[in-house]
Image (tube, rainbow, N blue to C red):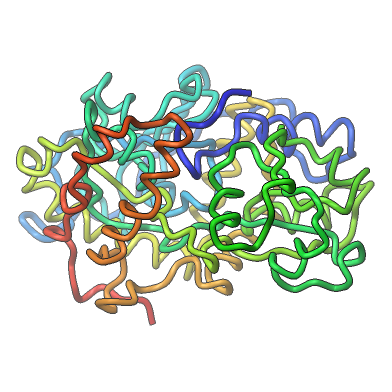
Length: 402
């Protein structure tokens, strides 16, 4: 497996391991059926937005607002799927869903199309897709991916959705004397198994692990963790803890884990971004659309039933081998709230707003790791202006989580 170009890119192998492979080798329960469900064909019952009002997008946005995700449908992407109204249609070849863009029962007058990432696009980075197909208005672009693409495919983040990364290292509590932190679990010198060297090098720079513990051979399968429970392994707080305890029969017990964001893994995960030129060219649309996206994330976490139903339907219809049960979907929502993965911006108190100091810190602290990994040249790294990676211009400062 090649080195990912983004620190937090979803693992190629994870689709196999926590999907089809885990289903067959480790008897994963709750998988989607093999027969795809028919696409929804009912018409929208949503009321039309007030003409010229904040939810009327018809006069300022494209007729179809295309949004590109970086992975297959899951509850971490709930804000997008929550806006897909009744009567949506599914393209099972292109792995896209299209329907009326509906906000809390109000039809905005445009359609939304959400495109799946990962295997659906041959694992191409979202910035590359956005520049290949200018129909895409919004893309989910991790801060590190934006840094890597900045020289040739610059994107500007317009609002965050997940505030902190759900990435974790996980371990077997029984094999690590009930350890509650990564530092405690790693203290005995056991391998830190990841798919790339950025995360272990971050821990190495803090003196939490030694160089001899770095093992970048992780391919996404649960087999090694089950057979060698002394290792620490990367994962996502919104998925693996539930899956290992409830859906992998040969494990079937809790894992210990800690968020890497606790230890300085501070990137913004999957903030919504546009091409640099569209900050100006699509400004009228973004003035209305960005607050809708801010509120949609909050609404989804408060009432995830519709968004999760769309996600689960799409997983079944796309039929890629990626399995995503209702239990995982519900667990993801709970973890996003309970672990503080989705919270107001600490600096401003506004949901979805970017902290300039945090962006600057991400660039200064993580760019050297990206240079070392060969994802970006030293010259390109030196040319990056942190302020060019984001804008708070379209943020509605009144939108806050309770």
